[in-house]
Each structure stands twice: as C-alpha cells, then as structure tokens.
Amino acid sequence: MTSRAHSRLRVTGRTVLTAAALAVLGLGLVLTAGRAMATYRQVIDAGQPGLLTLSVNSETPLWATLKPGQESHWLVQAELSGASAGSLALEFSASGRLVETAGLTAAVTACSGSFAAGSPEGDAPSCNGKPRAVLAETPLRDLTRAHARYALAELHAGSPRELLVTLHLPETATRAEVADAAATVGLGVFAAGDTTPPTTPPPTPPSQPPAPPIVQQPGLTTAQPSLATTGADLTALCLVAVGLIGISLALHSRRRQP
Image 1 (cartoon, rainbow, N blue to C red):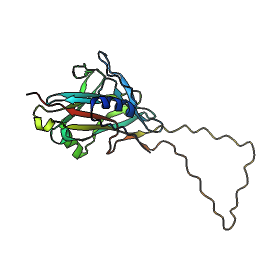
Image 2 (image 1 turned 135 degrees about the horizontal axis):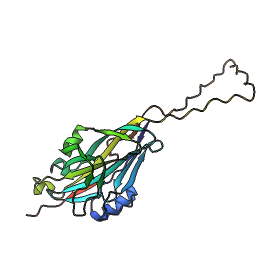
Image 3 (image 1 turned 135 degrees about the vertical axis):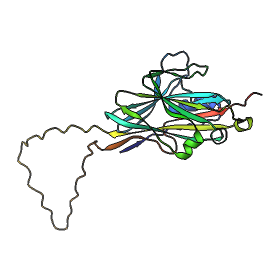
C-alpha cells in the first residue's frame, strides 16, 4: 500500500508569497519571534489513515530573501502512527538559477531531543540534546541530479523526529549569478514499515444449522470473493516523488552591496 501527498509552492514576490502560502498550504502560519521551543503546524498527513504526518515549525519561513553568505533555516517534524516503527529517509528536489548557477547548498541536522527556535535575526535553531549531521553541506544541484535518498535512524510511534534544514547561498556567488535569480526547494520524507494487523475475534458457534451447499448449474459461473486486507504487509507510509512531496520553499536572491 502506498500513500502520496503533495504540497508545492512557488511565488514571485513577498506579498503574493504570504497569501499563497496560507491559501495553498492552509497553514495559517504567523511568523512570530521570541518562542523558546519550536511549535509545529501539520502540513501533510499521508497514509491509511494517517501513518506519517509531516509538520513545519510555525516560525519557519516559506520564503526567504538571501544575499551571498546568508542562510535560511527550515524546521520539519515527522511523526509515525498506525505502526510501532518504520524506516525513515529524506530526499531533495530543487530547481532555479540559485541552484544551477549560484551554488545554493543544503545541509540537514537531526537532534536527539528537540530544537529551540532560532531568532528573527536569522540565528540557527539550537538542539536541546545531541545533534547529528544527516547531510553535510552539499550543492543542491548535485543532490537533485543524483536523486540521492538519505537514510535516518528508525522512526518510532510516539517519538516524533525533528530535522533542521539549512539552505545557504555561498559567499563566492557573484553579482551576475544572484541578480534576479530564484529557486524552489522541496524536501521529501519516506517511511516504510509493517502496519499492526487487526485482532481476529474467535469464531462464534452458529445458532442455526449451516445452509446447504450451492450447486452450480450448467452454464453459470460463480466469482470467488476477494480477501480482506490484513494490514500486515510492508507499507510505504509516505512516498516522495518528482514534483515535491513535503514542503516547498521559494528563495529570492538579493544583490550583494558593493
């Protein structure tokens, strides 16, 4: 069984972007400051009936204006239900001149605890536990061309996983490379595991004698009933494909001041 969810956003300006983010994703996000802990809002619930849930931190911008040397931080949470445990992996998809010519990079960090939200000035969120690099800083054009999927530690029900995605525009990017350039970046999360099979009640003794067998008449056929799904098969809880599954982030460059 495979479940698929889509969330994609590309905008061309700040005002339009804010409105589009609320309309397309239905997040109702308010970018506020001063929260000590990251607060997440659900954006994708994929599965039968919701085995993998993806959420975005309410302070994570769905857009950013970058100049060379600047970063944008993106907090995402994955949560599992309907299965005791499952494998987890992530993949990037990206396009645009900031990716192809300006060298926009991505890095991913996991935390054994939870992340504290960053500051409005652009400080990175901090890990309240032991941080672990899932993906070292890598050019997004390389990640997209390789279609690489990066395995994470196993995800357990009742223990959401928080991931910090850092998008960085290199200091070496030239004025010509960043002028009026943009990019769309998508993060996909895959999970797979055994769903919990339902408990089969013991058979109830019949209160009436069984009906006589049906004798098939010549020229007639009988269809075999289909077997009910037990839910114990290997299930793809959330599948990321080309076209971006997860959250999209529109980045717009700003010319470097001389």
